[in-house]
Length: 306
Length: 270
Image (cartoon, rainbow over all chains, first blue to last red; front, side, top):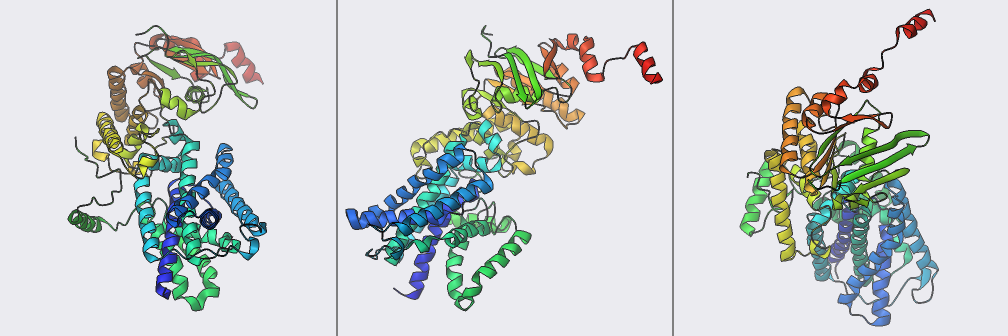
């Protein structure tokens, strides 16, 4: 596989995780700095059931996602029951990810400990990565416009009011966390079958913070914004390899600049939309394609007149 | 009107630390009845509403809704069994459109499953269509159809109040708690709000509790029902608007009791 292909595949994998994280952080308002932990759970689970139980690859991917999703309850249930919010929940996820990493690091039988897990066949190729990313994108778009997705936004906007309107906070938060962990797990599985090797050091805190950065940069309550940034954060360091040592410095700088000039992120609270002209253009394109344009509001445009 | 009360508070008390916010309050509300709850600032009116809607738990006493105790139930559960409210300081979802705010009230408990939010079945589409229809009819009721696609946070204040009312009705309540719906409104806006609440009251069978500081709003809306006056966490008086207005204790609570001539003299000396 060529150099470009590998960037594209890694970009797609990153997009899948970030899509999930934007459901959790961008739409539900729960910050996670531990999503690499869910990637690790998904990647290891998929690889092990493939190697040991000979589960086919196509099934190992979603099962990796399910494993990560289930593991999210370990952190989610006590945290949301205890009404941990904001920074506290973020720290809890950080703790979870570190616990996962250390556990993987020190468990030698089956998973190989710090040596890493070897003997995974390379199965992920560009068509598969692209297909999964597209599926994940369509799923996330569909979810955030669904009633469940709108309830997530309500929780983000005002928990008390949401609960008073009948939204079950615990359920809604657990659901958002499950989705994001599932996405991370699938991405981890794709990653495992691409690298053909897994090591706990791949899933450290810097990976987690890269993911969160993509969501925050891309914008809250946006799907397309984080997707763009997710791809850019993979491609850009490759293009600017000579700056690699300075990457984190530039990140930090960009963060500060962004927070000062555009605190809502690249495309916060919107899908691709640059004013009425743009809306007309996309509507025209969409009608030619026979698809409704991405509505900013509910499913399809609301007929505003009785 | 049925005989069993829709809501009854029995000797309800709550203390925050050492402060007795509400003490020994009992009140009853029948289906389709609109009662007013008034009192000076800090009397505990909002706390009574918070107790009924489940955001705080009474330290003593019992709250019955349709004959069953609802003490200790979560607000979302109460919303589903038919208690809805508006807030004193408007709490809309500012990033959502007016339409989405109302729709959320309808699907606070989603009408289709989690899996169907990824792959919509015909049932899910039908549920979406129903929600849209109901939400639009509620928006029409409060005369906000034109603003359906506006972000709630960008609406003018008076319209936000109306929107919150529509959202509260969207949950399909039997008991509607209105916490100062006319707060911060001018005379004109108050007038149209009174009209709206009266229309809602007449067209629906909601039991309603109205907290309000604008006396003319309460007096007009509760003209032929009860007003409870709360002071220092206790019910000071209750009765028709006229009775309440004439009650010396009520006037005392609002304006401060008139001191006796003796008292005034003593004060002057010291």
